[in-house]
Every structure is written in structure tokens, then in C-alpha cells.
Length: 309
Image (tube, rainbow, N blue to C red):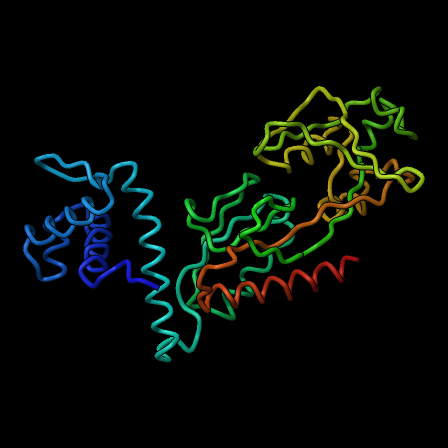
């Protein structure tokens, strides 16, 4: 394979990242024992090679251009992977250390993953965790995450998919709602009910409800007077307060069902589920801190699922 980066170009990339982080060519020069002019020339060579401006320069300060921000994220990640690989190869890192960025959907985060993370930190105190709770799909390249959990199979074939749980779906409502609106006994009853809606952030479409009737899977659009977006747990709060019927994962409502604050209905049409999987890029170097979190989540979430099942 032909060389694409000489030592000079790699050095320019390091100086570019340092100037971006410090917000100053002069500060970057001081940190490296160089002159500001040398740093400026190195970054100019990089801009010439890329054919784009990385910084917006004024007489008082510099800031990353739009293209510079995207390039910085990629370069910072690549340099971090090089440093990580060197530490592992030379034996400098015998235990995991550093930061792992993890994106979780709100319900699976609250009910499955977040309760486990203090135990992970107790086991690996040198690993810090940055957790994002969101139902939006992330882009690993531009958003700079190490891992994500999602409740739908991703279209990106460049991702590794590790199944965490096949979560059973149930339909529930509060006792007062059922006393007021009646108990649905068939799919034909649903149009007469308020079915709490959720909008998928990725498509803007309302989520179909999933049923099984006489061995056939049915994806059914429903209607209701209240629609939530972003946070799936909004539907749970609404259902608890008599807002309508809710289809959700059993693990989210099992305590409510045990306490009687919610009641399960439509059991004859159950049997459907949604997968929750751990995702990460296929061809990215995997630091030790990320590998131990993957192993931990696969093992510990598996124990929780087995116990609740």
C-alpha cells in the first residue's frame, strides 16, 4: 500500500488538533516548543492538501470552519486510536482507562443499563462514562460515540450488532381508563379507544402497534388524541394517569402491573417483541476500555433479562 501520510503531514494534523483545542496558534506553538509561524505554516500545508480552509482567522482569534469541525472530530479520533494502540502494544495499558461514550434509548437506558453502570465503575474506576439518553439514531463517524444501544435493527451494514434482549410487547392501561372507556377484547375494538402514540425521531412516522392473531403477525396503525416524541417514557406517564391504551415493552411496566397501577389487556394478541442490540463500528480499533464495557453489558444485561424472564 502506497504511503499517504508522511511524518510532516502527521505532525501537521497533530498541530491542527492542538490549535483547535487551545483556540490559538500561539498557544499551540508554546505547548510544542515551536514558533507561531511554524504552526501557521504546518496548518497552511494541511489546508492546501485538503483544498479547504480549516480555520476562520481574524486579527484577534481563530475558530474552526464548518469543514474544520468535521475534520477535527475525525482526526482527534484517529490520533486517539493510534495512541491507544501504542499503549497496548508496549504494555503501558494493563488495565482499562479513559472515556467511553455511550448512546442509549430512554426506556432501555433507565430500566436496563443505567442501574448497572455504578457496578461497572466500581470494577473499572479509571474508565469514565459519557452517556447520552436519546431515541435518535446516532452517526458513529460524526457524533464520536463508541457504543450505542438501539431498539431497531440498523440499516448500516458497517456496524456490529450484538443482541441484548428480545423485549416482549404488551398493551396496558390504568384501571380508571378501562372503567371509563371499557376493556378492548379484539383488534376491531382499538379504533374506539385512545391509543397513546409515539413518533419515531428518524422518520417522523407514528409507530405501528404489533400483534399476533392466529399465528399471523399484524402491524397495525392506531389512533389517539395524544402523541409523544423524543421520550418513549412520556407514554408511560400518560397511561398511568388515564391517558389511554399504551403498547410498550413488558420490562418497562412490570412494576406497574404488579402494583395494579396498570392493567394488561389484549393478551390473546400478544407474542410480538422488539430487539434491543448493542452497536459499534465494525472496522474501528477497539480500545480496552470499550471492550470491557461491551463484555460487561452483554453479561450483566443478560443476567437481568434471565432473572425477569
